[in-house]
Structure formats: C-alpha cells, structure tokens
Length: 606
Image (cartoon, rainbow, N blue to C red):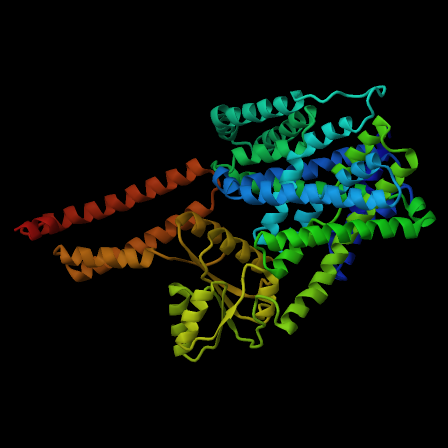
C-alpha cells in the first residue's frame, strides 16, 4: 500500500503516547515527560521509525495554535486590558533582562558580543505549550502564576518581529546579504491585526451564525479549524508568531454565543496535537551530541534555566506575586521555547552562528524543555511542604480533617457554617481575604488562610477525604474552574456551589454541580412580601413564589443543555412568557369565579 508508512507512523505515535504517558503520569513525572520519552523512543536515536522530523514538527505546531486560540476564547478585551501591566511590564522586563544577563554570561565564556546577543535572544523565549500545559494540569492557569505566565508568553509572541529585525542589525556593515532595518514589517503587522479585528467585528459572527444554522456539527468544527489555521497562517506570512494570529481570532469570539461550543469541539484536537508537539521535541533531541559532550550540554541547560528562574522569581515578587505563586510562575516559564529554534536557524542563515555553536545551542534548548516537569516535581514534593513546615508561606497549614470543606467565608459562607456547626457538623473553613478571616475568627469560627482555587490548598485541606465541598467564594470563573478540578480528580466528593448569575449557574449545572443562586432566594422572598403588602392573600403569594423558584430552576437546567446563545435566549424568553401566561390565566379565572375580587393594585388604591 502506498500509504502504509504513514499509517504505521500514525499507529506508532498513538501507541507510544498510550504507553508512555500513563506510565510517567503514574510515577509523578507528568504527561509532558511521557510525550518527550515517546518521542525519544520513536525518533532517530530510538527505534528510528520516524526520521523526517520537520513535517512532524510543522503539523504539531497546530497544537500550539489551537492552545492560544482557546486561551483567547477565555479572555475578552476588558480582561486583556486589565492585564496590560503584566504583559508590557513583566513581559518587557523579562525579555530585556534575560537577553542582557545571558549575553553577558556568554561573553564571559570568550564568545563575541554578536554570538552572545543572539544566544541571549534565543534564551529569552519560553515555551507557551509547556508552561500552560503544566499549569493546566494543576488547574493553575486562572491563578496569578498562570495569568503571569500567559502574559509573558503573549509578550514574547509580540516581540517576535523586533527580535528578528534585531538579527539583521547584528550583521557587520557591508556584509553580503545584510538586511537593512525597515519599519515595514511592523507596519504590515499592525495593519493586518487591525484588519482581523475589523473582520471579526463586522463579518465573523454573522458568518459563524450562518454556518451554525446548517445544523451539521462537523461543518461547524471544520469552519472553526479553518478560522484558526488561516489566522495563524496570515500572521506567520508577515513574520509574526502563528500563535499570535490564533490568539487574536479567539479573542474576537470571546464574547460570542459560540464560545462554549468552540471550546468543547476544539479541545480534543488541541490535546492530541500538543501531545504530538511534545513527541516532536523528543525526537529532535540530539542524543549523540549530548552523549558526546554531556557536561557541556547539561551544564549550559541548567545554567540558562537557573538564570531565568532568578530573573523571573525576582520580577514576580516585584509585581506582587506571593512566594509560592512566584515560584510556580518562575518555574513554568524557565525553559527555552520553540521559537528559539527559529531565531537560531535565522542567525545561522545570516552567518551569525557557526555550525557547531548552532548545534550546541539547539541541543541546550531541547534539554531545557526537559527540566520544567522535573522542576515542578521538586515544587510539588519539596517546595510546598517546606513553606507549610516553616510557616514562611502565606497560606496556613491545615491540620484538621473534616467531612465538609467550605471555601469562602463571606456573608454567604458564614451562614452555611453557622447552620452546619449548630447541628454539630464540623467544617474546615478557608478564605483568601484576610479581613473576612479576622471577622470570622472574632466570632469564634476558625478560618484558615488559603486560596481554594489552588489544588495544593485543597489537598492540604483534605479534599480527598471530604464528603462535601461548598464553593462560596466570590469569583465566577474560579468557582467553575475549581468545580471542574474537583469533579475530574475527586469524583467521590459531593459539591455545592454559590453562583451570582444565571450564566454561572448554567456552567455549573453542565458540570453536574448543584448551585445556589446568590440573589434568587432573597429576591423571591422580597417579591412574596411585596405581593402581601399589595393585598394578595399570603398563601397565594407563597404558592406563586415557590412556583417561580421551580420555574427558574427548570429554565437554568434547560439552558445549560445548549451552547448556542440564540437558542438559550429563545428558551429563556419562551419560558418567561409561558409562566406569565399561566399566572395571568389563573388571575382571570379567579376574577371570573369571584366577580367581587379586585386586582391587588385596585385593592390598595381603594
């Protein structure tokens, strides 16, 4: 068969992933090390089943593109603007300081300033795929460490063109092939991004609505993939990172009615292709060079990582991250990323690096990618327990183990805890607001300082042994993310969650989490009292209030079963109209049965 090699390679990729990833996940090294090991086994230095690495690497880059598209879907313009200090402050300082310090260290190794600056530029890049994947596995993407890591990765994507232009400036004057500096790529990039935003505002959503109206899910998925890949290709054609184009496309749809549907449809593709990317990295590791010069390669890799951790850890504290979060952020972004291969390749083309230096640099880049999972193993096993033992960490060490955990001790959480303890049910209460903790402790309710959105805090509170966890803190995205983490990792634990809005309640209902709408109870109670004050019979008012509660719960359940916003609005409008018609018909029947009966408003007016 003509396509037999391709089929065999596909079979090998799937088999290697299915074999290596569970093993490495089980022994605590994480999925990334498993994928890298699979790549080593399949590549030229393993069984040699795959020798053409460039095609595999290009295909696997779609995984990074999809990752950035999904990250863009989670944001919107307002949330992105709120991150501007981290993106342009933390991101700029990280890139500039890393370039300067690495260049200085390389210069001290008796290299020229040109080589030193090129290697500094490459070292400044981090791997978006590795950092977000490893934080995502720990449900830390939505935490300060995850947001900071994303901000740095986003700035690095923005810095692509300036760094490539910087390579041309390093060429000696009069050199053959020297590229003159030009603002044209930057202007072209700005125009293209503006055009993408205009297209998204004017034509994208109507076009997606038309595609969705066909009613064929596979066509909708095909169009979504077309949107992502075409956005990435457009930005790559002008020298920008393809991930940047995908991120912009996701950002344009962050507020659309199709956001949830796109996340559900594309996430499996993202996971598989990211796995392929890590396998490709594993296959590209030059094992012969590492074996020939192990001290040099491993020493340089750990030296670069240590220097980046020092820079990132210092900047993280300066930008307000507490010690544990600062460490998580610094370790997540400490490796050298895939874009370094592009910079090193371009520098080699320009003659700025000789072949041997380029090969060593590429091997060091690949080696640094292996360090991140190992560093996080140290973070989980050593660093977090150290903070707990020494008391220098900001979070309390929770010694007690109770069957109920309440996360969030505001007014909502305090009432829950009071009633449970009144029935002699012991509760572990957690909050990350020191004022709330002080207020609760003054009334004799022991409350621990900790952020329940963090998996390590939940683990420290004994989530694995708990029967019930109540999520009562004031962060809609955090409540949903924490509920998803507990559902995925501790399915035996029962969950209750506070929700502030119908949208949040729908997300939680889709996860199978019973929700308590924060305002619905008090609002319905107020409406019931208002009806009585206006002359309604108290029993009738109580019946109407109870029926409305059931009606609203049914609406939330039905709306949670669809992802299309237009369909949700239709269900809501139809349900509301049906409920009003029922009440109006009952009122008309009551008046017909008793002509002396007045409307409540007429009774008050008389």
